[in-house]
Structure formats: structure tokens, C-alpha cells
Image 1 (cartoon, rainbow, N blue to C red):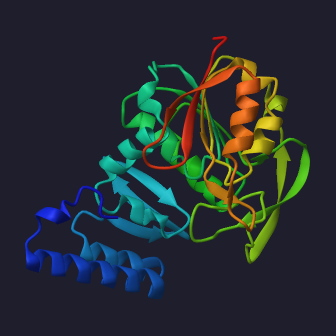
Image 2 (image 1 turned 120 degrees about the vertical axis):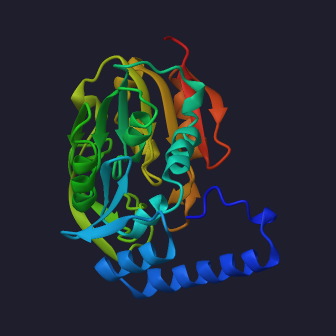
Length: 275
């Protein structure tokens, strides 16, 4: 929300204004929705430019529309350029030399922010995205419709069939791992190996604690992957455990080495030593 703000350089009165504005924003987030929410945020932030249409929140940025199913659109209210640069950097992707046409597979696409971060860097990738949540997938489809993308409205696992999907309707933390959610739904799942993908430059996995199962269903595909960027933060189950030990053990056994670690979150970048 406040990316790029140099608060330490503010005067006393600027800091007071900054704090009051933050408190008012929290109130607006909690008490308003839809059109009223967007109008109020636009009043508070000069460069906000968000609106509500057909149950989605939309941000205008660089002559395109970016859709969200919920108030996570706030991520783009202030300094969206920095936000997309941070997404790219948080997955350690500045450590990889990408070129046009590289294949990027995104497990846990959400609304496609990763794909857009490549777009805003003028890297024309072949994007393959997996997102099981229906409303979020609708936003993903809208956000990548003019890009080179293949999208799948399903979850990745180590089995095929139907699984329970535990919902976080206000954030981006829905998961196939039960974290104590109050809402759930049924979704279709498949292993990544089913898609027989080849020549993958990057496999990005952000499965909200379900990373071991995603990897277990990707054993054949891993041979085709040059880099894996994986979020193994504290998100698994009701205990909110990290999957770093299981993930690291599995990837090392498959010939990958850890080459970078995110300064923002628990994300590791692995390289296939055979490629």
C-alpha cells in the first residue's frame, strides 16, 4: 500500500498525516465494499484509479485493466510499478537470464501478477498458469487475455480427481491444505506430469503449504525444468508449518541446487544441475 514512501524523511506533521491516513484506510477496508470502497480509496489516494464492475475490483495501469476478485486490488493503489518489480525480485527472478519465448509454468497463478511482471519488463514469455479458484481464475483470464498464455482452472496435486479446497476469500491464501478455513469448496486436481510439458525455463510454485504434493506430482516434469522458484513459507495446515525441509530434501535428491534466497519472503530459487 505504501511502497516507495520514505517515512523517515517526513516532517512531524507529515508523519501524523501519514498515520491518520493509514488508520482511515483500515476503517474503509473493514466497513465498505464495491463502489463505495473504490470511490473512497480514490478520494484518499490521488493515483489510485480503481473501480468496481461486475463483482470485480479493477485497476487502470499503463493503459490496461487489472482485475481482482477482492480488495487485494489495494496492492496496486500506490506505486504499482514498484509492486510488480518486487514480485519479480521476491521470486529471485533477477538471478535468471530470460529471453523472449521462454516457457514459465505458474502453480498458484492467482490473478496473474507474475505474468504481468514479465510483461512490464518487456519479456515475452510463454506463460502456463494453474489457478483453481473460480473467481480468481476469471481475473487471471482477463489479465492475461492479450498475452501468450495457456490457463487451467484446476489445482496441482499428486493425484487426479476432486479435492477439498479451503478458501481465503479476502486474501490470496486459499489452499488444498486445511488451514482452519471457515469456507471450502470442491475443485478438480491433476499432477503436473499429466500435461507432459517440455523445455521449461521456470517453474514457480506458490501452493500455500501444499508444495510437497505439487512436487510429488511433478517428478517426470522436473527433468524438463531449468529453474524452480518455490514459496515454502509458514502456510501448511492449522499449525502454519513451513515446507522448507521437505521441499529442499526432495529437490536436492532430484539434482537441483539452491542458488538464491529471497530477501522478502521464504522463497528459494533452485537450478537443475543437469541443464
